Image (tube, rainbow, N blue to C red; front, side, top):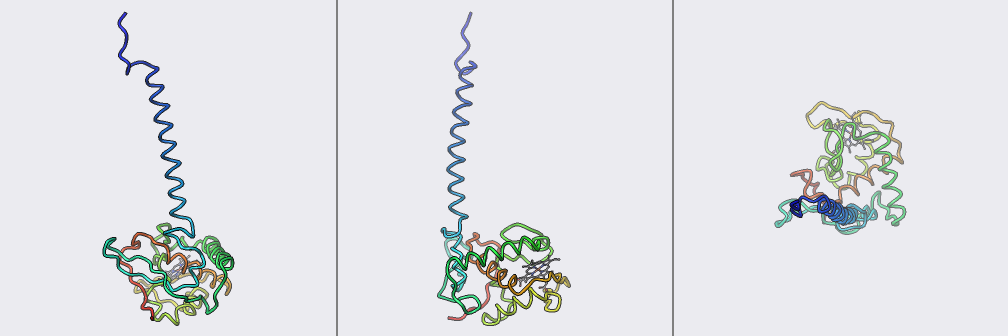
Amino acid sequence: MSAAPWWASENAWKKIAIWVTGLSLVVLIFLTFDSMQQITAGGKRVPDYSVINQRIDYRFDDVRKYQVPVIGPEAPLFGKKVSAEEAEALVAHGKKTFQGRNCINCHTILGNGAYYAPDLTKAWLDPAWGAEAARESLMIEFLKNPDQNARTFGTGRKMAHLRVTDEEAKALVAYLKWVSSIDTNGFPYNFKTIQQGG
Ligand code: HEC
């Protein structure tokens, strides 16, 4: 009886299967921790929620070849600096409102959603708000009464009136400001930022 070569034996394949499964598990665990580090607020790419107290700007990075976020000097939202806890609560309220009102039914944010309406990932920095000083109040007015403040960007599409309250509008602005500070590897491609003083 001639012996089968080692690679044809059942035992060898069992061992290979066990090793491949084990190694894949190690790689998966490593990638999970790496991803968590990349997407957790307070990390390298996703700033802490208290970034809403700072000016958020972008500059073209010659090495990466796209716009990268620059966290600037103090520029508190609605003229009032908030604590880290208050900032987190405000952004969380904004995010829940965003999800509760199903804003991604029309908009895209961080790569998720629909393309009926403008991408909101950098909406805080949209030059269409006109001037930095007026932006906060214009955004609040717009979110509360989008049909009456429609700009439509030449598309003729209007945002639905979603009965957003004062509180919710403020939280949404805080959420959008925080999202705009996230380093998204230049996405959305070629966006332009609002002219900011200083
Ligand atoms: C029925 C579709 C629809 C839904 C739902 C919707 N929007 Fe809009 N939104 C639009 C359209 C269309 C525009 C562009 C027209 C305009 O600006 O008047 C717009 C514009 C905006 C802008 C201005 C974007 C910019 O870059 O200047 C913001 C901010 C915004 N929406 C936020 C929201 C938020 C927050 C929600 C959820 C509470 C939401 N939208 C839900 C359709 C929608």
